Image (cartoon, rainbow, N blue to C red; front, side, top):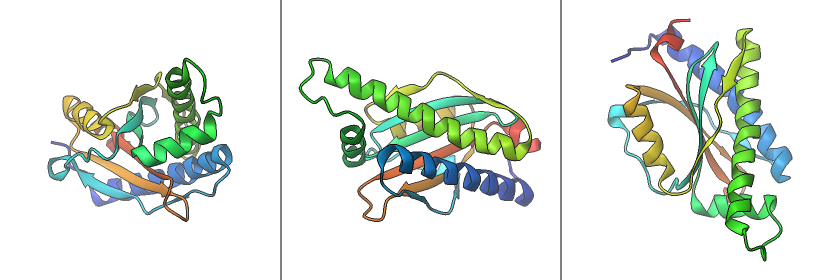
Length: 181
């Protein structure tokens, strides 16, 4: 079990806040709707219960100055709004493939903005893996990935618009060695 000191927790809050601010800006630019981050929360995986309402997610492995898993999760209603804003050709035979591609690209852009801002703050580099798109029970899939890696904690931040029609969870689960930096 990895325990984080108060200083390590503060550092993770700070880095998550920086990343979430940049993620919000990326969403705002892509969706033409103001998106704002909440205050990051430190979550103990043992006390965490995956919520099936977070059905869609884009998940990355981050490596470099900070290493761990990064996830962008959306509930169905938000995913529908985001998909409609990104994909306008609803009569296409390959509509679901187009939506999947658009969600992966959205995830790439948002995660890149997020992790680039964190890397700049740390004065290093962070590389992201190819995204894994989960279109059903993404929250459960992410929790499962965390348990497989032996993660005990993660930091999450919610991103929303003023009407709360678009609701996103941004999660970073650092590997133990990342907390020692």
